[in-house]
Image (cartoon, rainbow, N blue to C red; front, side, top):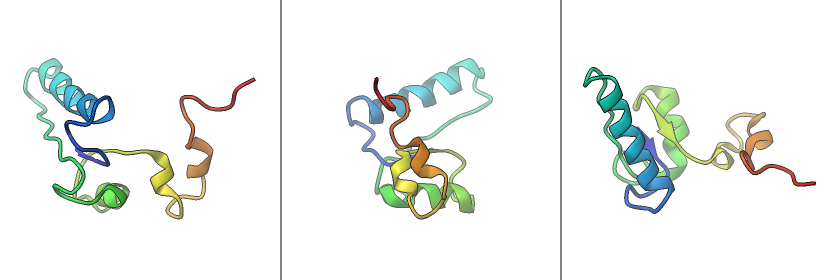
Length: 85
C-alpha cells in the first residue's frame, strides 16, 4: 500500500500501518500488506497513478489529490465530514 502520508504521521500514517497489520492478522497470513509512506515508492501526488498503473495494489490518500484525474473526485473532498446544517 502506498500512502500520501509518512508512516509515523499520527492518525493517517499510523492508521494505514494498523490496517496493514489487521489485514495480515485476520487473513491468517494469507495476505501481507507492506506500507510505503510518501516518498518511499512514489510521491504523495502520485499515489493515484501508481495504483492505476499497477505499481502498487493499494493506495491511501486524500481524494483532493485526484483533482484533474477524475471528474467526480471533487464530490468526495470532504467525506466523511461533508456539509453541515
